[in-house]
Length: 220
Image 1 (cartoon, rainbow, N blue to C red):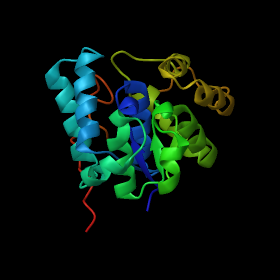
Image 2 (cartoon, rainbow, N blue to C red):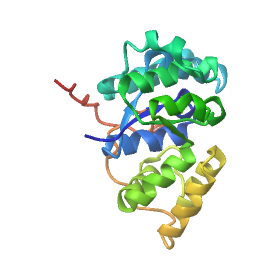
Image 3 (cartoon, rainbow, N blue to C red):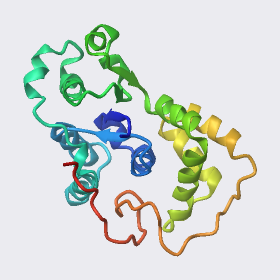
């Protein structure tokens, strides 16, 4: 079974980070986990902070729910009062404890002090560090998926260097530096495929006609 990881709302909101994380999850590099509360926060902040229209925000979140049905963590609410991290993120830690995840990926590491995590053997990583770990663990898969992002972007198209610059601006400078080293000499303009192969919905790869999603079956 893939390594279970709770994804905080803050890493599911920026498109470049969410796209890459969900593609890696689709490739079974890890098992994504979230709660309704996390997804509601994603939807709310897509509208509030990124100024997406409510319909597109809801479509994006619903597609995530449908494509990763096993990602939903439930029945964690009774654990929230026992958590001692930042009050607004106690639901995230509670979801990790309930699902027995050993890792939370978040950009708000300060909200998860070691004293709050240690009793539950949960760690936190920034998306930059987490993706760097993924690159170290399986460089060929991560490089392939990163290249597929560039190929799948059609409207607008994007160059490899442009993609790396976008990842760095999104908050992944360490990952980008290492990815550049491992892909020295990559074609600046990869040849497009006839059909995007990521399997993710249009909300992840903007303006690309994707085939209908086949939801991942629920575990028995």
